[in-house]
Image (cartoon, rainbow, N blue to C red; front, side, top):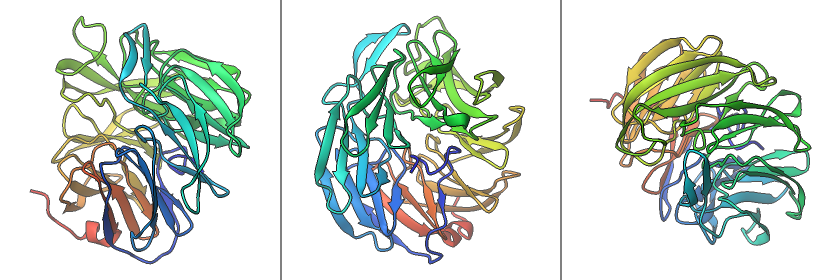
Length: 393
């Protein structure tokens, strides 16, 4: 099961056709997308816990506290729930040449699906915050020290390790065509692809002072497009940091060869937050991506990078959206959940929630959208309630 259910980062599950409505409060916000297996919803929380809820009622089944922050999407496979833990603080900070993200403990942790009990732990040299993926019988993860490791999913035994140096923070391994594994990191800034045995397929260097690439997953069709985002400082400062003028790029590479297709500037502004994420979604030949520089959502042609439309939100958009039946649903930092015509950007509906959305991204199960908020709420809301609400100012 992939972190966002598809390489396109568009988590739409057929599930039950029934609509359901509930809310649940965790101890802190979530920085990732929920996972569904059967009638159970799994969430990683910034309160250092993994939660299992009843999908249809929001009732707590179990909660397992862990030893550090949990920001990976839980991966559930054959009765095992796998997450990464680790801090967001850098233990080595010499940008843009060398960074190690993650103050310990940093690890991959496997829990028993039925009760949340611990099965195994594999210690990492860098943070376990980035998302991993399953490849055959291997759990593959790119950590904050620049290591890519492949573990046996049953035992946690190391099968291979590839030293890439470039550090990941909250990005994620993505599947490319022909069995390739795509990832990206900083210091040095680059996008790369590995074969499933850990050997290097290709590497694409980004501008020396680029950042943000370590925080943003890759959306890909597995063949022609591998799309992500990076930030470039406008002044002489050697690395992007808060309160500095930056340029936001969206870049697309050929997923199998690493050849650049295009590189498009979509926003310029002052970076106000330390989290540098803006998560792309690829659907129907278009890339949808927000910004934490200015409160806008953008739609780009995946083939050319041309901006098709751009719409203003009530708050910054750091999370991914989700597209179903020609509608893009996306939450912003003010707590507004929007429904846009995915082709034109026209507003269809907008529903206000009591908490803002940052990096936590939505999923759709049947006719219901589920999303975690910045303050710890998890909301399940029927799609029709979003489509018919008109609460935007």
